[in-house]
Length: 103
Image (cartoon, rainbow, N blue to C red; front, side):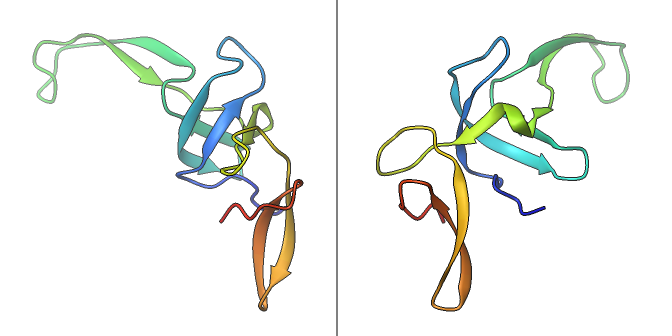
């Protein structure tokens, strides 16, 4: 399966509590079908005191969401778009369905 979303892309969340949010992709796990998006699916985790965090307490961290719940944003139009692959000068590149190059 081709990777339609890459680290650093700006995406729009299409489902869940953060629906409609535009944010940057921090990491992609293709095998699990998950993406980590900045500021989306934030959970509170209780941390015991340790050498790393001597105070302990509650921290807020982002958790991965399904890759099917995000769509890349076309830089020219600013709208969420589907992605297809075409060959330009012998290279495989990502292109929005409107025809604008994403890479």
